[in-house]
Length: 238
Image (cartoon, rainbow, N blue to C red; front, side, top):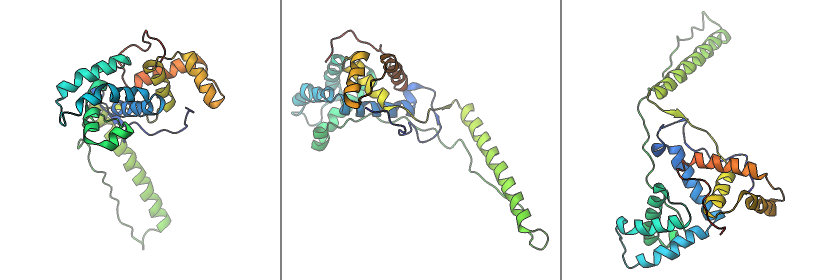
């Protein structure tokens, strides 16, 4: 659970939809969240397998309407009853029914990624007057060429950013903290207090973060995945 200095980007590009339900950054962050569940609190996924999967093996192609109540019950058990997470649990169960490897590894399957808004920009084009070797020395010409190219690149960037923003696209954060997601999993799903998490980190790394730092990280993770529920459920530690 050591904080890594570099983490994968949440999106391939720099702009995203302003709507949480359509944000690639949110969708990617939720994928990472469930990957951290598999690493930090695997019993949560094991419980989904043990409580819901066995009864479904008799039906190779179960209707999602049949799976959803089972997944909703499982999600409520871990105070994870967000609609998107229940939808993903349904798809995960269907994947487990199709693939023994996925079942064995408890691979999580997220629902379809949001669409990407494309083709609203234009190709970058650049041209410059030709070099006349008998009239201009190369150093002088090449300097003028690079100055013109730099200006064209800057103009293109400004124009495309303005276009993206005019269409309502928003800038996204490049990196995020896997450690914050770990803390969110332990806090929200496993029911540990910030003090318990600090002790756990200290046992593994020898360095205990301040509980207030942990709470800030948990709040950052909540915002990252657009979690609509409360942070701290009323429950006993698991």
